[in-house]
Length: 281
Image (cartoon, rainbow, N blue to C red; front, side, top):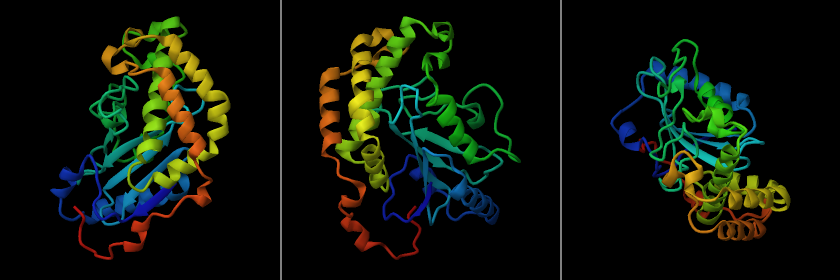
């Protein structure tokens, strides 16, 4: 799903960088228009993209954790910026779902926001190809190669041999807790990034029974079995803070309080849309 938006004061990781660019070249606009148009009907389930109507080079994506991974049904947000020389260079992308910089979800996702993928030039392997590579490929790579991995320990350099081991199982338990805490509960309690709140609430409403009856009880047991931060590759960045029971209790309460999407209150700010054509950046 792709949405074109017009926010008054967009908060974005690359806002300062975008502000330094005044106006987009016709070449860049043409390329972005084609790519966004293709994504309108071409994005797979579980990927949502919002594009600034005045600055198409500034975007934000939400990717839902695929089934079978320790990120299942969590919502993960990424800020994206298309440099003025795009597509000669790759997009810039940072994850903003990091537990306020405290929790590392994957070897390829740093707590400072860095996303490691060869297509972005931040990981070894086949890189960006200006003639053929697209933002869609970047999003699909994140969904499949990072968030879709059943045992993320396989992405850890030097830990690949642990796939199928008890250590891998424990690491998954820690990641499952992190997903419940920071990719579910956090957004239910504090609201999703601007413009995504209705989508997030609808997602969790639709998955509520599955979460309450099956996923959360299973993940609670896995997280409790995982133990302390010593079970994961990144120690303090893979640490279960507080108790698993507290996280599960709050998440369960938040899910039970959800209303059907058509009963969610409308955002009053929608009535005060800014009609100005002035560049937000």
